[in-house]
Image (tube, rainbow, N blue to C red; front, top):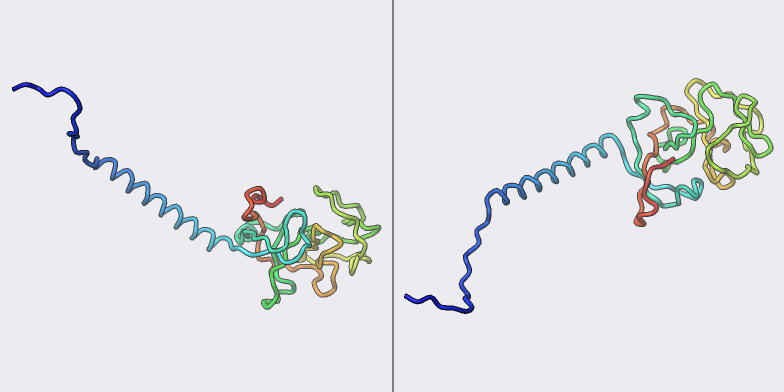
Length: 194
């Protein structure tokens, strides 16, 4: 029998490779497990909240969502410079406040000439903060108790913080956790909180 020359429209049927199907299935199961574990870790260890007001600008904008690490302060104490989330005076009906720790338990805090003084020495801070126009209750030296922290907003002249009589020093038990990651629809604004 003679062979035909030219084009042929005959194609061999392709069969699905069982090994490929198994690899795809395993990858999908892995993705589902990772997403589930991430959800469990974030919901049990952390939580999400929004910044209220402009007191932490320019680093954190009003309405910006942040993730809170609720476990870190069970293992250690807040440090100077940490951005913490707390309920003022433990008021469960209040929104979460987000502020920076400047005074630690046992410190003597005073605001003079627009600057923070700790134990009579000007506080050296990592950020570039405005000179404070209002010292509030810190006009006179305050001594923090063994479970108290003095907190300020980064936008020092537009912040309700420990200088305010209705907030004052923040008790350790009122601190929910450490603000550690900021979320945003804009990729440039996503990142670690310093």
